[in-house]
Structure formats: C-alpha cells, structure tokens
Length: 141
Image (cartoon, rainbow, N blue to C red; front, side, top):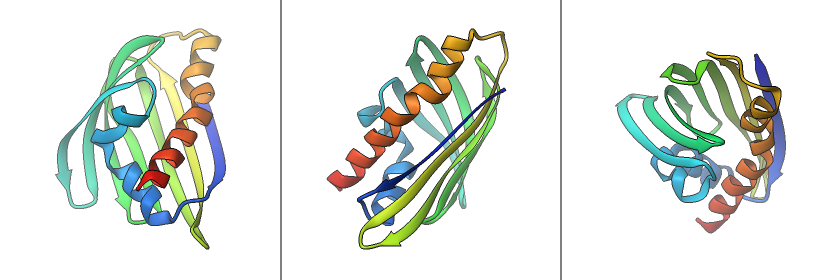
C-alpha cells in the first residue's frame, strides 16, 4: 500500500478552495494528467464520479465522495482498472485573513504489482504540482 500526505497554507479563502475542489468536472482544466471527470450521481452530500487519467499510462476509476462544506472532501474507491483501494481526503481549515490550511491525504493499494518508481510518481510526486494547481485555480476565482 502507498500513502501520501501533505499540508500547505494557501493564501486563498476557504470558500474558494472548497469551490475548486468540489467542481470535479473542471479538474481537467487545471490538473495535469486528468483527462476527464464525469459526475455519475449526486445524492445529498455524496457524489459519485468517474475519473480518466493519463499519468505514465491511461487508467480510469470511480470514486464516491462525501462533501462537508466547507471543511472536507473525502473519497472512497468504487471500481477501476488500476487500484484495489484508494481512500483519501482534502481537509480545509480556515486560518482567517484569507488563508486556508489545506491537507491532502491518500492511501492507495494497486491491483497489480506496480514498480516503486511508478507508485511513487502516482502517489507522491504529483502531490506538490496538484496542490499548486488547486491554489492557482482558487486564486483565479
């Protein structure tokens, strides 16, 4: 199993960060490697979405998200061709003065043996660029 977690302080208000993170279908516009996201179903604070990515190789998966405005977006794996498990969350903490503490955490287990280099790239190497992309997009709002 692979785990990654990173916390950063964004110079952006919590509501803007939350808005960016919950607009799943816009992820391809600003996140490298995300080809498409399609919301399949919404039921209260639960959103089921299908992701298509192209990071080293093309793959897709479906996740159930639970949103708790404006502080948390968590997800759990439903189905896909690469993962056995992928659970994680975005946790947001309002620091005041237009600043937000943003924590991304993910636990992934792959269906097949994935070389360490590939696993590291998929789980942790893309993390800093993903956080920067979210912050940049939130600042644009």
